[in-house]
Image (cartoon, rainbow, N blue to C red; front, side, top):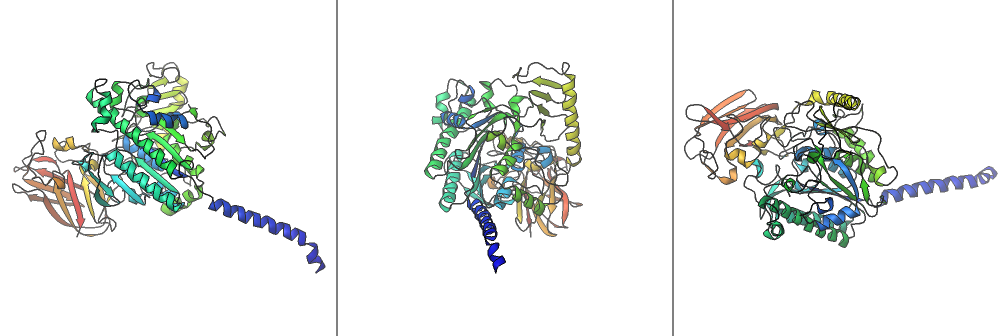
Length: 597
């Protein structure tokens, strides 16, 4: 007993220490976690802001957010929609994650890669998307298949894309989860309304959330209420006036969004990231902030975009410009650090696949780097690194931009110092051979890790329990660009179109319904949709899949043609096209509905 009494003070000390540790851990686990809100605007270039010097457009609410944020002024994305979105969702380069293009069978993320919504959902966050997804319209590529619990979204690249051929900006069509729905009003207003409603519900239930708000605006077609474009009439051309009007509408909605965040008490502890998805288009006719190039190009005007981070309660550095090169692949690792969900990333990685297309060795790494130390003022620089910007329908070696500090190596053969020459007018490739050599060596190593899987196409599932019926469109033909309503009206894409890469999930009997026009139009195969359309003398259809080759005659007035085949399970290609009465190939079947019977 005496010995027990002697050790009591030490025992008590240890018990107290243990209690402190337990209580601290409990408190930390119960501590509120920051919410995440990413606002991604489509086709608004670096120069399409009044805060960036545009002399015509007025963006007062965007300007205010700019002034309240930590701003990355040398921030890079892909020069086109889908690759940027895939990079944002995975933290991986486009050529590594598989989503390299807006079309041509290359707009899907490779299976097994953890996505941003999956990571945060695993960590206990609610996840929602409201707007343009553009990483696949069918299982297993829909937002609801990639980690979003709640999804109000549009297919393809948006209005008048092949999947949204007949859709409109006002009182149009959207998807809620897997089901088709309708929306009232203007599409941008609607997306903001849905996101704000969803965040208010999360606030009421005290649920941390990741809200992804990727707008269709200001992408063409350039449609907006007159009150937004009228202030620019006469100052710029009609198309640019409508483009600026769409941005003015975004600006107005941003004010509504910020008011909603304040009213619900969410603003202080919500990480708000504002960015755009590629360089500008229509706005380039007036102002491009001194940058060369535009959307689709490897000069700065194609891929340098704004990225602003605002988190009032996050103990970030004071609002300021940070001018070191950064990339949208950096945002996911940054948010993982901000929200302390690294352990969930590791667990999810193991669950999804032990063999991810990772740049690391035996474990999952991001291509991006965390910007948390920069944003919190712990560091004023990043470790020395080179970045690669590359995308493409048919990715080719050297079709890229390599970024290293102030240097830009464009297509492996042009070198620019963007600090001294923002407009990239002076090629220095012969004057700095040592720089070129280092940057080319970096790219060679990067390409060697990417190239082996470039033609390993990701498939769309047929007959899956999660989606027994799928609607395929020409947007996903391998190697063919037939993504827009205009391509379909003009019967472009080749006399046989292209193949769809598919996986038959379950062996069985399948029905294939082929159409020239979207099913909702209910038009005959031989009809023209408008005066701009090309009518085709369709008299037969042909379909090949899994070693089977079938043909069927069509009759005048037929709106489609239906094939029924028995298929084995497995990966294959589906190809379908139309012919005339003499057996000459006319065009691919732009729409194919596949149902397991």
